[in-house]
Amino acid sequence: DIVMTQTPLSSVVPLGQPASITCRSSGSLVHNDGNIYLSWLHQRPGQPPRLLIYRISRRFSGVPDRFSGSGAGTEFTLTISRVEAEDVGVYYCMQATQFPPYTFGQGTKLEIK
Amino acid sequence: EVQLLESGGDLAQPEGSLRLTCAASGFTFNYYAMSWVRQAPGKGLEWVASINFSGETTYYGDSVKGRFTISRDNSGNTLFLQMSNLRAEDSALYYCAKDGVKNGYSYFDSWGHGTLVTVSS
Image (cartoon, rainbow over the protein chains, first blue to last red):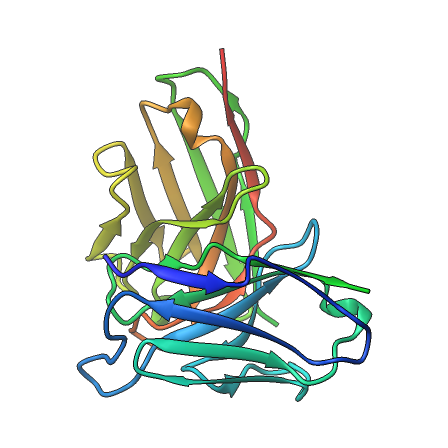
């Protein structure tokens, strides 16, 4: 199974400053169809996860453009250009290329200073 | 608007059974694979099971294989998870999640709010 490793596991970022989270996969995420099914989810306290980014860099409907995704091979990054108060919570990367199983990163807790 | 509404979570005895239900609306249910994902209190996300768009193909995580059964009723736009031989470590919030691509396994673009399962004597 593919193991997804996120760093850092927690981060405190001043309001308005950038933040980034890295996710490394233990194997290739290139699917037979040529796509890379790496997505990013955000979970606010007490809420279900919601999709932010899919296929490495595509923003889901309604996601602010301060969120961006990048990466290739086995290393992927979620970047928030200017953190806002509503961005607190836990961020997860997830791979679907080597399904089954779907696998998630451990989660990165983001706090705002 | 996509809506996923889980129900059926409860307090269950070890070795007991529960049936979870997810009522779906706002999209063409029989086009998309569906999954259950769980989250133990204070922990991360764990994939539990998935079913393809037609219901003919199912997949399970190792921790639930042989004990849980995922199924769907496309005429009623409903997803199910039959849970048996429950263990304490099955205690979690169970989310229903919709795949983002027709007939595929790609990413979860919609999530329900979850239903809580607690296994304890």
